[in-house]
Length: 441
Image (cartoon, rainbow, N blue to C red):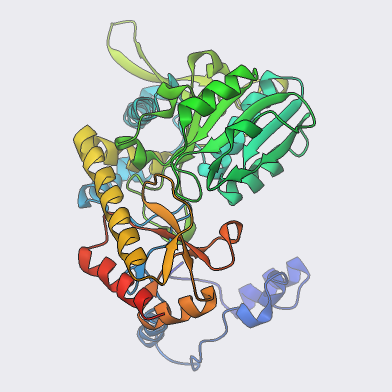
């Protein structure tokens, strides 16, 4: 908020109504040492001077503009063509709300329909909904679909799935008749031999990720075949950008495909808002959460778009609802649709290939230094785990001096390991600089 109109008397009255003594009392859960203070701004200075002082402080923050970031783990730095912001900033899209009146909302309804169609094409599924909040909630909603299909049992999750996703899945299913149980990976990929074994009940569904949290590409077809042999649903978490070069999970046997749509033209934005996508086989269509936009003909034979299925409790009887998901990320879905339409099949393929080439080049250069090596010897897309000979804290300190964020720490992979991500935004010079820093360890 750029302008706050409340004077001292207004603030006093609001605090009195809330029965608190100061604004600080609104934030008791935030430790005092990390709360924003007065920034050393003297009283009585002009608005222009305040703005200049705050901009100076803001310039001290590190960002992807001031450092080279190789962090991934679910949020990725990608190049976003200017056309994405231009189209998505148009008022008719930027201010559009839930399209309850189709006759007045054909534009936004069509954009969502196009988004759904492209997600189906990308994932190899039959039906997609109008989008979800983020990848983690999409994975949890997929788990709920399998819970709603069965009376009880076990939702098994590979330990190679993003740990944040695993925590959200466990939270969603805490009160369900199904239990969440983790199946350990072997050398960075899901161990097929462990699927269905040592579980406390019947396997309802199995959730895996490809490329997984460690960057390794899973054998989706073999996993899905094994899961189906156990009478369960196969749920795949996917990086949508990788599907420009990898076979769609839905065409390799996955019943449900979910993931984080942030790589599709959505900036990092300090963690959100992002976009969760979900696609399912036709037989699971009525289990989808949220809403589905459909294409139809009006009485005059003209094409029109409407909300076809709305399985949320606001629209139908609560006991018939599949989820209490409240809305969809329409603006983020629009960005993804514009990105995919602009890039096209060949563009998506080229970006995916660049991610593979760049990440493999850096991995090779790192290993040539003799100071670090890949933790897992499996095919990967744009992420890989590096195991350093030196302690991770020392590694991070050295990279910090060079204004480089070398990756994120992954405790599951070992004490001295970093998950490194390389996208199309990195040049050969950037990657050579990274390897040069490693050589100095």
